[in-house]
Length: 207
Length: 122
Image (tube, rainbow over all chains, first blue to last red):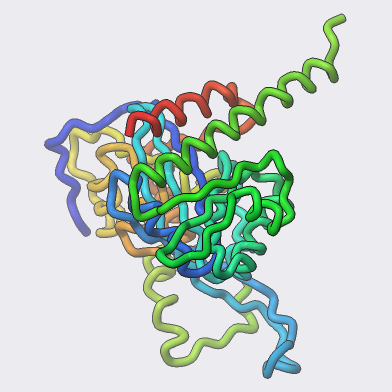
């Protein structure tokens, strides 16, 4: 048993709400670095247990059942105002597990897919995931030292994504650059709300 | 969670035992509307509350709003376990919570604009 000291007055009501943005991409592309460069706290780590059906592949032939894996994820926090907190979640490295983590994507405002032009294919899975779940995303190419320089539209073309999706260069070690990535994402998300409002008006004409 | 066909040996059993012992074997919270970005805050208590250590720890850290993900990180317990503990605290009236805004219940542009303004000020 433990006692909770009650000498500090605490809140009676809770007016604040939290929203989230996901930062995805291949292993070692800089997801946690980006989260850390803009977060007001040192990135924290949370874990979830994900269950998957093992189908008897590899050397497990004949054994079928449910296996549970712990998936870890780093995240940061930005207090937008006293009533609004933004959380930035870096998706876990093991793609095949976070793809089964429904809650991760649920109600996310949008996502940043970090790409590394030296191994562009490592972000294909993330692009696929967000396209399938209809979560709006932008591509941010993290420019490592000695990275071959491409135009951002070349990267978009190579990924075969919709031309309307912003692609940009960044250096996630720099706070201003990570900030610019988030600004680009939010500006893009705002442009997406406009046609949605217009089509809603069309579908329910005022009688 | 189905446990009938699962066998744990040696280190496989280790990391799982403590979290689920803390939650007294429960893997599902009584409330299903808790998400990792649900915010929680301790309710003002002008009395000493007699609760187990993990619960007291949560109350102690929730004097200002925290997300369930933050509680999980600070307690070093998986989200599923933390949701069970928070669910108890909510049932006992010691913690209040607020779910993240739904896509449907907030003017989307206004919310996005507020986030954008906040990031620009960083």
